[in-house]
Length: 456
View 1 (cartoon, one colour):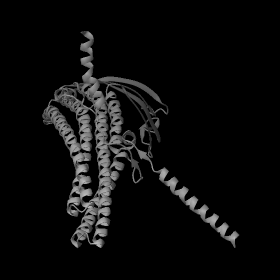
View 2 (cartoon, one colour):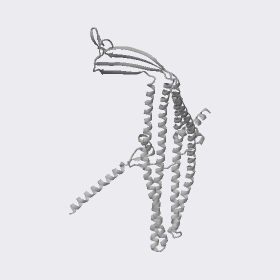
View 3 (cartoon, helix red, strand yellow):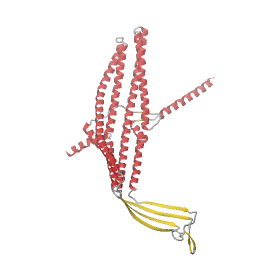
View 4 (cartoon, helix red, strand yellow):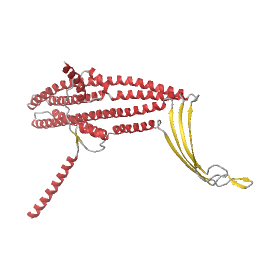
């Protein structure tokens, strides 16, 4: 009997060990992403970036199309025709056939455009501008996605911190309820105190559930931006402060110089200018050359000769639209309007970038002041809670005073974490608005100072 019990126990232990190992492997299989890992994943799999990369392929195709207008075009032609009826011609010597049943045609044609009123040159310039535009467009897309990743990452860290604070609050209120219940049984606490402790505990669970739901939503949004789909993952990071002491004027100067969005609008303006030049080319004549080498079988004659004979032809074509039904003036008017729109948008984009930089800078300053204020508040709230807890445990104060101290402490901690998160988000906004990372901004601003000191 003891042997059977020993074997059964060993089997049970083995099963539990395997289950524990399996669960451990499952936990280990969940990937953990840092901020840099999230950025790398998004750079590889984000839909916005992948579509932006296709713009480069589109630009290459447009360049090929534009270049094709200045290189010769060679085309070949071949044909076969079967004639069922043989027509004849009566002569003194008898009937002569005018055609044969089998008829063949073959030839090559070479065409070269010489002049199209500047349309070809404008098309080539526009195509190469679009190539530059696609590269800038990709940079802007990458920076936009990077900001979205940083924003969601920091908001997720904040949400997780809030969950921790809410859990701690629930734990404290559970402890308070336990102590209140004990005091109530001993007769040192009223039924009102007991009911109040229960209500406070019940009310504290709702914010915790909301915080947990927000974590889930933010993880889903972050996974979408990273291109992870429904994959489970965890993040690791801290809501710390990165020192950043830069003047607003320096940020404005760098933003106007390095923000990809501004360069993108400038290139669009140049593209619209070339589009206007292409439209105005309709007022000019066009000149092209051609040469062909063609042969037919049968060769024309009486009677037709059943053999191939080739011959060369060459020439030039000059064409000038004297009146095209106001098509060209309409195209020029349209292109002129598009060019003016592009010029206006370029100037407006510069103003928008400066506004974005200023807003981000002010958000950063406000978050920094809030951090200093809330750090002091958290320290005071922690001290107040400890005093209130001691007073309540010794029967000097009521449970309401302790509960209020607990709620003040949790809200102070949450506000501090929010200020830290908003500080990091403001830094990410500055990076996006300027078009440079924080380290690049620091290096570019400090470089002139180093240069001046070296000259001195």
